[in-house]
Length: 327
Ligand SMILES: Nc1ncnc2c1ncn2[C@@H]1O[C@H](COP(=O)(O)OP(=O)(O)OP(=O)(O)O)[C@@H](O)[C@H]1O
Ligand code: SF4
Ligand SMILES: [Mg+2]
Image (cartoon, rainbow, N blue to C red; front, side, top):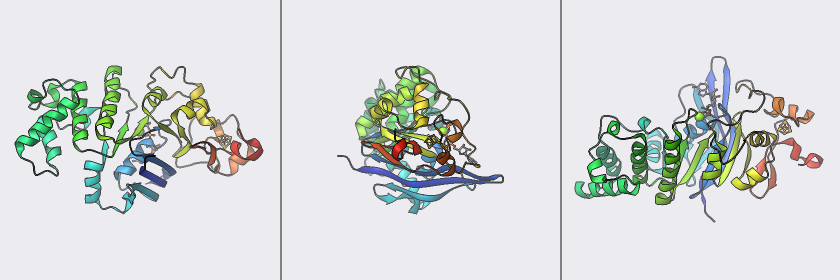
């Protein structure tokens, strides 16, 4: 069995604003094993990106702060690292792969220079051998005529090609974890498909684990081994992907899946269910889903539900799993 590469324990990331404390991430725990792909799904504003920024040590300061928990990467708590150590981890250990490559490529350098810079980070190899390695990286992400492409600038390439360059740079760093945060506004469907393929290719080349943040259950079905469903800064259900789709237990997950017309069809947004998520600076005392939950009980309004084991590797935070009310 693969060992854990990333373990998040009771992570809390809050924003201290003039109007109050926004609990963007409020006590989440999950684990990703080597080479595994974990999907993180949830409505807009549920704390998915802040989870990613917390792992990368990039929570917007000064308002944002990690106020609790541990982020164990290869067994070491990232919250104990200083900025230069974190920069090194972001460079090599944990890479963010943007769907829109323009946000990660520098427009004023040609792609060859950008790949060489990445390869140069910890190499004493000759310029010629680095160049050869750059060409083979471009070839490994199936860029045609890679030797002539080295001198191209990002704007001279198509969106799909630019994505492949970003993929080549990611492979050059041999990351242990890739974080892919899908933008809410979806790009062209073909580009998205290319991006998913590229992630799989990087994973096959490097053996990296992936944290895949998405609104799209179809993408989850295609890409992920496990899924964590996030609601109002917390994870409410976690399971292997097939188990979650076949046997959802939490009323929020059930409502979401009930409103997905067809898992094979890509959706730009998470399907909407009735009502609004709560304000994160004014969370209710009990279960945050209670105002929208068709199965709400008195207890739900008083106390946040503890985690119940509801199947093999399957957990859900809902009072309905407690004793006689078990589902
Ligand atoms: N700079 C900030 N100041 C105050 N609150 C913030 C700030 N940035 C984010 N938040 C809060 O953190 C919450 C979580 O934001 P996050 O970006 O993680 O959501 P998300 O799940 O990634 O949403 P989306 O699917 O739209 O990308 C938001 O509801 C927002 O209220
Ligand atoms: S704890 Fe209660 S309100 Fe929350 S999801 Fe379960 S049944 Fe619904
Ligand atoms: Mg986001």
